[in-house]
Every structure is written in structure tokens, then in C-alpha cells.
Image (tube, rainbow, N blue to C red; front, side, top):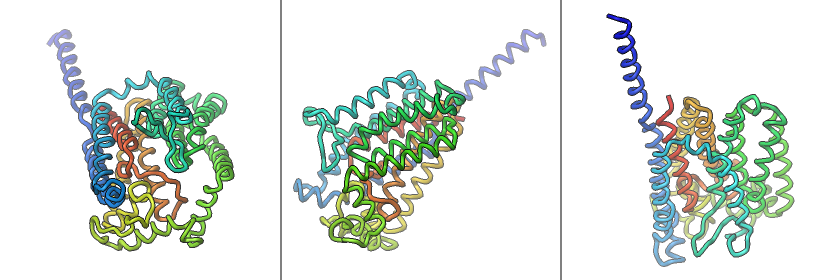
Length: 386
């Protein structure tokens, strides 16, 4: 055999190995895909029950909010999921600056008269020609794209540096978080956690993260002083038995719902708390309704599903070939998991009530559509990871 023939065979073997690698990398993580599907469809199922009383009371249709969630959250979310799962995630890296600027503009539009809208205490909606959405939900995904691109461009050495890493990151985080915190502290906390998760994955020093923690506690205290109702929520967290008919009403009704569910629950659709007893039954209190109707076993299975999602997402971040994909996967997984933890922890009394929805499950078209878009990005990254 001549050297020429040997080189030809060597190239042919390399070509076959590359093709094999491409075919292998083209397959998504089916376990991750199945988890996302199960949690999403479970969310639609329990929402149909949790929202039935409010839907019938307000619209004479027990499935009004379910169909609203289906058409304005699930359907757009599935379309976005398929788009983001199909398009190579690396294409988003060159739009990092555009994502940051868009995030800031969306958050500022909330304060523009005639465009920004308030629901309850929170001024966190944009309403244009009868179409409304929550920009802060979109910002969560945009910020992940933006920070991942910024950190991957700068590299680990500059990220570890105080002046080139910590200071600009703190400024970016403050610029994005301040408009959100003025009206919705719970969402601001989630955004901060997402950003710090990306920063940590990019190689931040523990001492720098500790410094950010001190600044965050000080800012949190200032925001509590700025809004007395937040101080009341903190006191309710510390002493839920105080004033159960006023300040402590929400958390005590949540405890009652979770406790009355027992091991197996009262039965699907049989909740008593959704009959105008427990506030926000289809929003941040939906976990209490799940516990009441389906019991401790199904509530535990839901927690387990989120833990499996965390394991698969962070495993994906560890195995991703490039830094940008690693940062994006870590950011999206942190978003899903910590937001779910904050919601469930508040319902069982481990954290103060902050009004944070349960991802994939709580009512909210914008929230469901955006988390499905983020899930699509995770699936796309899984197609190129080792």
C-alpha cells in the first residue's frame, strides 16, 4: 500500500468519524425533552382545575383562563420552542448588545403613560392596542443571551478581575434590575439570581460574589423601607400566626390547602380553597392547590421533576463544547430551577411571599411562552453537546 492510498483511507476514516459525530450531535436530549413536556402538560391540567372557579365567576365559563393560557401562552410557546430548538444557539451570540438594549427599552416602556399598565401594586405590563405582555419575563431570556455573549467575549481572566469583571457586571445588573425592583421585587430577585448564575459559571471569584451578596442585602433592605407592604410580608414570614385574617391571610390559607391535601389529596378538581378563599390560586399559589387536590405524593413528584430538570440542565452546561453555550445553559437552568424553588418555598413557609409564579405551571401567557422558548434553547444546545 502506498503512502498516497494510506492518506486517502485516513481522510475517508476521518470523514466517516466526523459524519458519525454530526449525527450523534444532531440528536437532542430526549430525557430533557420529555421532562419539559411532562411538566408543561401537567401545568395545563392543574391550571384547568385551579382557575375554574375564578373563570366561571368572572366570565361564566369554567375554562376561560385555561383557553386563554392555551392560545396566548402554550401555542405561541410551542412555536417559539420549535424555532429556538431548530436554530443553532450560537447565532444569538452576535446579538448580545442588541438583547441588552432591547431589555432596557422594554423595561422603560412600562413607565411610559399610555403604554405601561398596572395590575395590583406592580406596574410591570405593556399594553398596546389591547395586547398586553410582561416585558420582565422576556428580559430574563434576553439577559441570559446578553451576559453569556459578554462573558464569552471577555474571557475568564478579565471576568475574575475586580475592575474589568465585577464592577462592569454590577453596573449592568443594576441598570437592568432597578426598573424591575421598583414595581416587582420578586421578579427582580429572580433576574439577579439568573445573572449571578451566569457570572459564577463564567469564573467569578467567590469573594466578588460575597461582595455582591452584601450589596444585595442592603438594596433589599432599602426596598423594604421604601414599600411598607414588603415589611409586612417579612413580618408575616417570621410570624405567620399574627393577624391571620389580614396580613397573614394568604400564607395561612396556603398552609390550610397544603395540609388538607394529606398524602393522596382531595381529588382532582375538588379543591375547597379555590372557592375565593386562597388568593392567586392560578398564579403564585397554584402549588398549594396542587397539594390540596393531588396530595403530598404528586407535589413531591413535581418537586422531583424540577430537580431532575436541574440535574439535566447543569449536566448539559458542563458538557457543552463552547463557553457561550455553557453560560446560556447554566443561566436558563438556573432561571427555571430557582424560580420554581422560590415559588414552592414561599408556599410552604420557607421564604416570604414574593408573588413569583411557578415556571411552566402558573397562569401567564408571556411567562409560559418565554419559558418554552428558553426550553427550546436548552434542547438545541443538547444537540451539539458531548
